[in-house]
Length: 365
Ligand SMILES: [Zn+2]
Ligand SMILES: [Zn+2]
Ligand SMILES: [Zn+2]
Ligand SMILES: [Zn+2]
Image (cartoon, rainbow, N blue to C red; front, top):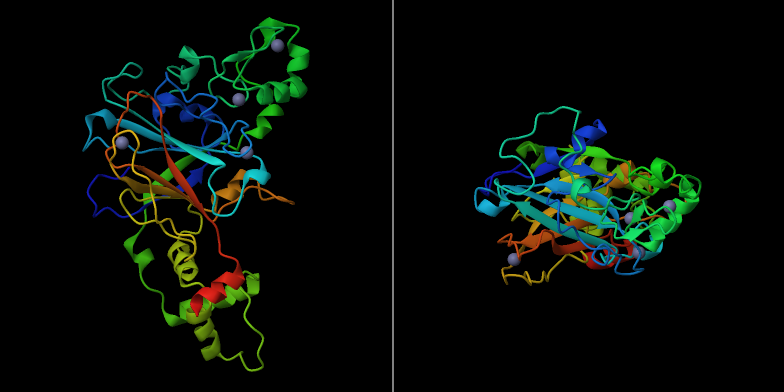
């Protein structure tokens, strides 16, 4: 992960299929999907904190980024950001992140949960220490599970929602034999979770950020037209190269062009990590301009990372019909990474979506 100095380039995240045991808490992973690999193993976010701000139903774990800050703060020897999202497409609205919540957890090197030295990468005992050792976790989503099944008194849940889901998904049958009830729900119920991947981070090569030649811009623009993402007005003689170049440079959203150009060399990037940097906006509309200061310590919040639209491909949510989506999800954190006597501090998140084409045209004039 990046050092603190600001000459560091942006780090790009890519998904990687990795054996599940390597994604446990003790290995401090950056990952997508499955259960969260909680960092602080006590004081997990409450079901209220992990509820969707639109529908109040439990959010599902989307991804976590291990991003220590130890050069500056002793308390941040380990530090992980956790992102949760509501599964309900109805809660997914343009340029509104009320269906997403982000939490920051951090620990000094000497802490109550992990040894001073990195754990050996072996499968045996990989789950421990884990939040399941110290808490009852919801057997569906891996969040805190304060609710207990009334008949077997073994199965634990974060919410009535996940209990109902699990009941239909197989717990009804196993509930009669409390000894057979495991800590995790059946595979079919677990489909509610996103597929699990490790996130590998690597620096974006400087060269990738160079300006494109006119030819390259042309080619890109033609691809855009072909893909139907951008339509150009039909006038009789607009087919010459010059006209197209004009279109590319004048009539489409410059920011969207910039976005496309910047990710072109790494089309698979699912995350951009650039603490204290500038986000890569997907549109010139609805950029984040007002970021509230940290309510805990009063320090300004700063940009830390963004989740890219490419992640949607791996989440298997973009099948037929309406689904959750985003242009980009932007996470801003307390610049002091303050502790606030809490294991998990909520930070702010924004969602920027692609501007509708009519708006794009209007903005150019
Ligand atoms: Zn919701
Ligand atoms: Zn749950
Ligand atoms: Zn039961
Ligand atoms: Zn703060």
